[in-house]
Length: 315
Image (tube, rainbow, N blue to C red):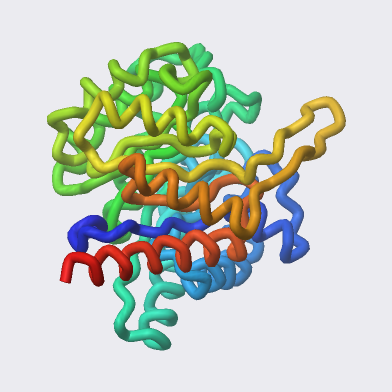
C-alpha cells in the first residue's frame, strides 16, 4: 500500500492549473470534470507530466464529478455519471502504467478524488462548511462516486478539501458500510491552524479518526502555504497517524478582481518548506491550487535526497 515503504510519498499538484496551462477552459461549474468529458487526453497527459516530475500518486479528475453535479450540468443519469467517474480512474491508471513501463523500478499509485459537497455548490462552501443539507442527503451525494471509484480499482480514496465535521462523519460511515475494504486519506480545509473550516477543533477530528484503520493519513489541503507548518505542528500533537499536506502555491485569490496575487515560494524556498513539512511528520506531500509539475519536481527531488541521506546515515 501507499505508506508501506516507510518513505515520503510525493503527491501531484494542481490539476486545474495544469489544464489551464494547456489552454483549456475551466470556467464551467464542473471544472476539470467537464474536461473529463470533452478532452480526456489532456487529463491523461497531465497525469503523465506529474508522474514524470516525480509524483508517486496521481489524483483522479473526479473532484467535481459527483452524480448530482453531472446530472445537473450534463443531464447524466446515475449509470452515465458512474461511467464518467470511472473513466477518470482509467486515465490515471493508463498514465501510471505508461510511466512504469518507462521506469520499471518505480511504484506508483492512483488516488480517487472525493471532493466535498461545497465544491458542488460552487459558492466557496468548501472553505466555510456552511451547508444547508441533512445527513441522509449528504450520504446520498457521496455514495455513487465513492462506490464507482472503489469499483474502478483506485489504490486509495482522497477525501479532500473537506470543511465540515458532519461531512467527515458521513464519509467515515460510508467507508465503513459501503466500502469496508477500502483505504482513504482525509484532508481538510482550515479557518486557522487548530480549526477546520466549519470551526470544529482539529483535535476533535483527530479523535474521531484515531482508531479508524481505513484512514491511513490525516491532514490538510487547499490551504495557504503560510498556514501549513503551524497546522502540522498542531495536528502532530493530536494524532499518531501519518500526516498529509498539499497546500496552495502561496498566492492569494482576490474574489473581486478574480485574480491571484502575491509571491509563491520557488526554488530554495520551496525546498525548505518541503523539508519543514517532512520534519513535522508529513508522510504525503504535494501541491494543490496553482502548483505545477515544476513545483512537484522540486519537492520530489528534495525529499528523495533527504531519504537517501537518511538511509546512508542508518547504514
